[in-house]
Length: 211
Ligand code: B1M
Image (cartoon, rainbow, N blue to C red; front, side, top):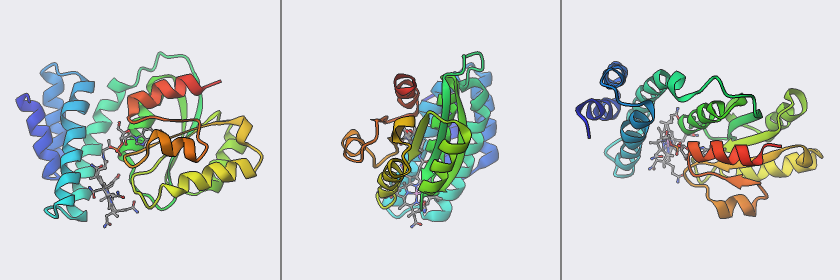
């Protein structure tokens, strides 16, 4: 790994936000592309944080400061990842499901969807089914995009799909799901229209699903 990327990786593990942002700036100055900074330093650093958490070397506070450092670096890359010249492709209600506070992956999906020309209605984290329904009713969305990072919150996706159907809105929207514990089988099982394993595939899936 290039020295600038290693610095970013280490800064995230240390929860060092200024170290992460100055590392991202140094990498950009060195001509490293935004997608490479994301794929080679930021995302692997969060994977390492998860591994250290599983091994009980890291606890929630370390995870939290690492996530803050990563988010700061990610927000610097956002203008470079999002191509503002793309024509509007539709409107997406995006959120992390009820009980789940993880938002880095969701934010990344939002950036990639914006880059693919979608308008994003970001509902945030811990989004209950009725808030997705309100977005469909009030904000003219054509796509619902749900993220879950915990096995315990995945059922929130099914609850949301069922609630959308019960509200008589299922034919008005396509529903896509993703997040580390989610897979294509689960998406099919709960009646979603599609699953994407990462943010860039989420953008191509949204393009395929959009009316
Ligand atoms: Co949490 N956490 N966490 N955490 N956390 C995980 C998810 C965990 C796997 C760690 C571990 O044990 N290895 C584990 C879940 C275990 C499980 O359920 N199987 C876990 C746990 C247990 C917990 C708590 C319960 C810990 C506790 O309190 N004891 C707690 C729960 C809080 C809650 O939500 N109610 C908790 C809390 C936290 C923090 C708040 C400290 C922090 C989140 C901060 C934040 O998001 N603002 C945090 C973090 C940072 C993590 C890890 C380390 C990193 C997650 C991340 O941001 N990854 C994570 C371990 C890991 O994933 N390696 C872990 C980077 C991000 C870019 O990837 O989100 O997977 P990801 O998104 C990817 C894809 O999944 C996909 O695209 C993205 C990239 O291209 N994707 C989609 C995501 N959404 C999509 C939607 C789509 C399509 C694709 O379509 C709509």
